Image 1: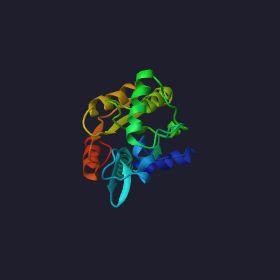
Image 2: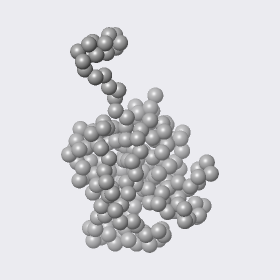
Image 3: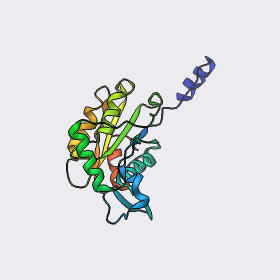
Image 4: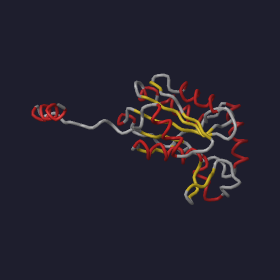
Length: 198
């Protein structure tokens, strides 16, 4: 039946297109610092398959591999400090003062119907770098399906997932995912549960 519909559309001169690939959009502080840190001792960086990854970076790549998604890294216009402790101090200070860093560029949201958005937990919630970026693009995200994911060390994963949902009020949402141990098995189990993987 699908074959006949496709032929009919072609006969009318209409283009038959496949459904759009999802987008995995993520911010991972560890991705920018991994060349200079020991992954066995530094927060936000881990080793997998002999390679260093930021926690959220690895989680994003696992999701993209399992769903055939495009990847887009959220990068601040002004970099955070290269060391972990100074970064936490800067983030806390910016949070208190309402200072928001801008993101370099933007993906073409019109190409995607489903967008995964991932962050680490920063001071009990999502980085303002990301939530502000999502709010700025609320019109472009309207009607899209946004699926949050979070990497964390100790707690506040629920609050962080909720912050990403709150930052995208014009979008539809599916159950988010949070983990402190990014791995393919856990990612695939979640993706199957929410209908994003066969």
